[in-house]
Length: 159
View 1: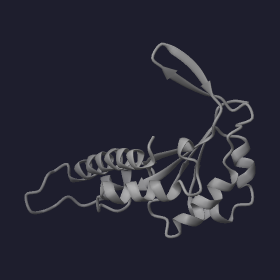
View 2 (view 1 turned 120 degrees about the vertical axis):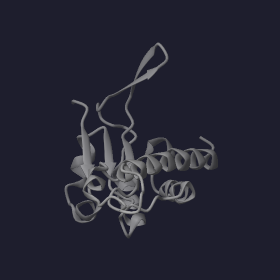
View 3 (view 1 turned 90 degrees about the horizontal axis):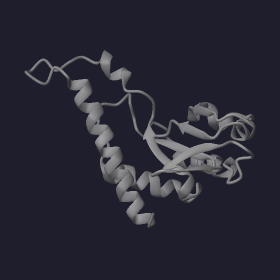
View 4 (view 1 turned 180 degrees about the vertical axis):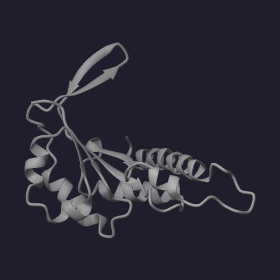
């Protein structure tokens, strides 16, 4: 079976009967979660269907010079909203990741953004002498917050 990636939006994820089938055919999942109102429901569904035995779905990992095959499915949850210019704090992100581990094994959980940051390109630039790269500045702040929040969550989880 070939390595596959599936992007799931929670609105479809929650009511989608084919979720189990999707988890049989992909190695990792990018799941929109930062803008989701009922995150715990999404975390529970992911935890219910994610497998430790990925049934031949291989992910190549590079550890230094050693090449290894990893057969765990991975769920990368969106921890920053790409449609809201408010920058999430690292603490908010850490709390979301720790909460997700109530349902998703920590070694199968990763952090990502809800999608791409292209919606910010359509936003109006500040008219009061602000940065002409306002959208880019916000995107980079969100990415930095995600990295810091993931580091905090890792420390709290001992990983």
